[in-house]
Amino acid sequence: MAELAKNFIGGEWVEARSGETFNSINPATEEVVAVVVRSGVEDVNAAVQAAKEAYKSWRLLPAPRRGEILYRVGQLLIERKEELARLMVQEMGKVIAEARGDVQEAIDMAFYMGGEGRRLLGYTAPVEMPNKFGMALRDSVGVVGLITPWNFPIAIPSWKSLPALIAGNTVIFKPASDTPKLGAEFVRVFQDAGLPPGVLNIILGPGGSVGNALATHPDVRVISFTGSTEVGYRMYAQAAQIGKKVSLELGGKNAIIVMDDANLDLAVEAILWSAFGTTGQRCTAASRVIVQKGIKPRLVDMLRERTQALKLGYGLEEDVQVGPVVSRSAREGIHKYVEIGKHEGATLLTGGAFADPLDGKGFFYQPTLFDHVTPTMRIAREEIFGPVLSIIEAASLDEAVEINNQVAYGLSSSIFTENVNAAFRAIRDLTTGIVYINHGTTGAEIQFPFGGTRGTGNGMREAGQTALDSFTEWKAVYVDFSGRLQRAQIDTETILKGQE
Image (cartoon, rainbow, N blue to C red; front, side):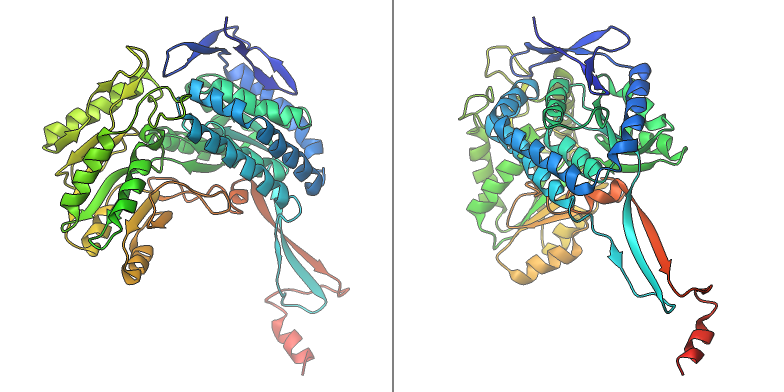
């Protein structure tokens, strides 16, 4: 029988108050990976109480000491990298090379945020009055709630938990229902690294009940959510009603622009990786290629040939390039969009159907390529979150940029060109949070801000130093050592006269 994945509350692994469970399923083999406790509001309340109690001492632990614990987390992640990567293949479906990369992001983030323990940079600035000093400091917020998706089940929790912890907050972590075992093993790393009880808690269960309980709990001061736009905005509205700080990372409809002067071989490699890596299940996945007319015939021929040659299968095999999608319902949703694309008049070049590399097992879908897609088609505007790529023709750079910018999302964009002037015009004019030159739309590094514009979020960013903005409040401090009352703005003339 599969192992029971439990909640971690106040330093103890415990079952849900309901006594109910559900199964986490391997999307390639349909075997049970873990039996998982099904939590509810009572479990959330218990975790919040544990986090509130732990916050009293955790916020007072010097940040360098907090950083030392994060360094140990990073070291343990190195030691467990292969174990976690193989579990990720089994529970989420990524191919093994990508799963290792997912864990590596968490390793990088652990060491990066561990270093922030000796910075957490504020700033000083000149003040208006004599014999007075001013500075701005980052302060912790309290208990924070983290709600993460299944597609990067180690990396994204690390983007949220590590900056929250280094800043002195305590955490309630709710992983996606499709990857609860990975969430639990991620938290076990922190336990083994010596994180004090109650500082990091995990609640396993459905997003509806657990997520809503976190969003509406008065003692949870910050919600950081990555997931669908619909759910994110609904949670945003709930949290705003009681004054919570909210960070949202939502959908994407990313495009790669290919100009006539592009390095075509490089562009094709990048497009395949961006569109079909993680089986297209990335918020940064390229679902549109906007190609200039002159180079389009060659690009289409190369993409069709290379797409058809991709090897599907179980991601534990090192030569497999494309794994399953995460669930049966996800596969059905992808196929509905393929049917929509055909109905809209797009030309299906390859794919467009369920795949069966494991003799009837698993949730596989053929990498799919559409040509003659117009910018107004639904497959060119709506997030599909699967291995479906649309080719759109553009006459010029200006038209390509306009097509890129007119969708509801603004996460990542890319351009392939050998013209430095065109590259810098694209940097200036592409209205996305991430811009790549001569690279695909995916592959962010943890030292830079991650996030997007428009429907991709609410202006907050993850990774880099900007990640701290979600989990800290600014505190302005003034030290007046003049020995008398000095009124900024009001006493300005008196001060000026005193300098004459």
